Image (cartoon, rainbow, N blue to C red; front, side, top):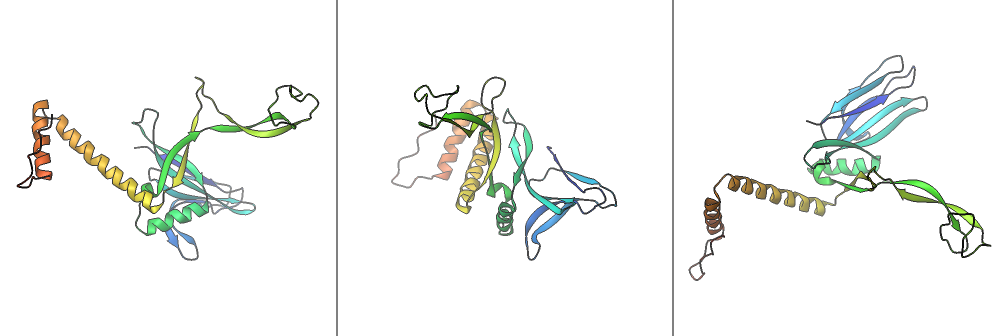
Amino acid sequence: MATITLSAYSDFGLTGQYIARLTGRAPRVDFSREFVGQKGGKRNESTSCETDEVGCYEINDQTRKGRDRKYMLVVPWSGVNGDLDELRLLATDKEDCMAICKRLDAGERFGEIVEISTKPKTKRDTESYCIACGTAVSGSHCPDHPQAATGVRTIEVPVLAEDGTQKRTVVYSLRSRVEAKRAVAAATEETAVETVLAALAALPTSLQRRVLTTVRARLFPKTENEAPLPECT
């Protein structure tokens, strides 16, 4: 089973770092916490935990300026081949964690609330452009406006892999309650289809057709005035 490691630290001479899994909301302290990594001491120390549980996590570092809390999501992810179960660690914020935990308290599951996808990976760069027309220029002046001044602006450029394709990065979004219900229904339907296909695959082809015809007849029995259902071919 895939695992992922979280860590927290304290500056020299301080203590109080911890790692907590957020399981819901709580009055006065914002969250119900399950402490999965906690350590004290008189010197600078760190603590870590290895987890295979998806969810919201709070990482508290103890610095000279006080507590430095970060919020992370541990999410499931399929590998490059689509068949390797992995976990990814994504940065989030307190507001999203509060929204997730409120819905956990209402009985929803983390996987129903949080949707994982990818987007093209980019990085920031700068380019020169013509003040007159806004066109990017590679030299010192725009060929169409040689007398115009040039400026510099920040742009997003693709991050490319060795084969020239654009890399992608894993991101998350929060489903609405309606979207979450649809996702659950779709997952249930897919599970049912896979179960039926697995059972049929173990039978000879000729018997598969007979079984499908029998199943259809039992699921959708004909009335007296209805024609019989055609056999599956």
